[in-house]
Image 1 (cartoon, one colour):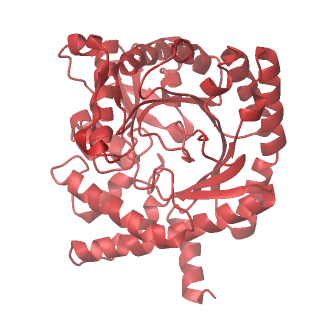
Image 2: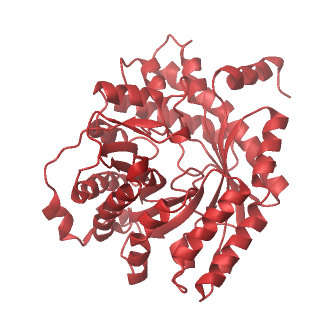
Image 3: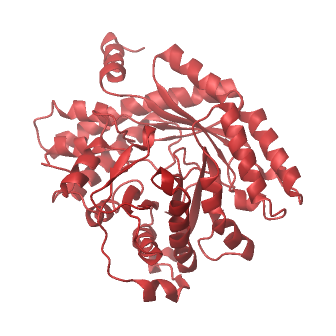
Amino acid sequence: MYSTKEILETINMVSHQHLDVRTITLGVSLFDCITDDADRTAAKVYDKIMRTAGSLVAVGNAISEEIGIPIVNKRVSVTPISLITAASRGHMQVIRALDRAAKEIGIDFLGGYSALVHKAMTPYEREFIESIPEALASTEKVCSSVNVATSKAGVNMDAVRLMGSVFKRAAYLTRDRDSIACAKLVVFANAVEDNPFMAGAFLGTGEDDSVVNVGVSGPGVVKVALEEVKGDLTQVAEVIKQTAFKITRVGQLVAAEAARRLGVACGIVDLSLAPTPAVGDSVAHILEEIGLESVGACGTTAALAMLNDAVKKGGIMASSHVGGLSGAFIPVSEDAGMIAAARKGVLTIEKLEAMTAVCSVGLDMIAIPGDVSEEIVSAIIADEIAIGVVNTKTTAVRVIPVWGKKAGDTAVFGGLLGEAPVMPVNRSDPSVFIHRGGRIPAPLHSNKN
């Protein structure tokens, strides 16, 4: 039984501290949609998604209304499309089917226009990756991801080089919308198969036919809890743990109930603290409450490491299965505190890169000048991916070379994607390194067999 104090505490978290379930993501396997005909494959994909996920939004809204907890996003993830369309070469037909299904269901995003090329690329996978800019520019709801490295395989630098070109092309094709196609594209090292968050969600090959994964949130709740802590950092970590436990229990409740009502498997709860542009819902403000004058100051990486660890320790005890990315997100455009620090020049790309060594993902929703070369974009990707490979963790890059804008300008994406100050980039030329291609070998510690 819950005590009156606990019930009132939860009500306060929802009404004043931005507690919410950030997303219910329904994973749908498309392996049974594979054919050697492009149009038939697309039709089967559309039918499977509509049949499996058609009631997702209604179920999410009903649960939210009944328990009084906002469920912000309802999303779908699918088997990486490069695997589904290899036989038919029908990726463009399928992406139109995906976008149509997403619109008709009423979900926010659909993830899985994805390729896994962490060791090498087949000729078709290269063709598929080269289609990403047109695919994202011509659709509204579909998101794309490419896994270019693992700690076991090393870094596929041919894929990294190609992704620099893909980002630039996607930016150009949506130049009239502040290059928003790039906000729907992410490059991974060590991509996970049960991630409920966009743009990197896809349903892995080891997953069930249909499964619900839930992403929780609550940076505002953690920040408010820390306002009462006057003790040392051990006490700070303890309060974060206790708060993360309470937040995750909400996610576990929603995941189990959504799976029951949809008649699918209950997957994981992702423990990530995911911010929004709303004031009071910022990971940066948590770090400042711990004692930093501004996120980006010296000490930021240490404070973030403690926050990430405490969130995981508290959350893991509150859920049957923890997965996804789990920790703390630091997307610049989606966090009011990060935006403010970047505008002041306190938070730089170099500092963000250091922070990614200890947080959930990586360089996320960072706007850079549109005239940056594709080789520099590839080098930014390579640096971040190397952090993930060497540290045996998931890292990612979602960088937006905003066409026609320079450092100090603002890119506006709208909604949950927010807006971002265009950040300066080191212009020293990495072209010779990037054009060498090949594969950076896996680190020695990966040889554990």
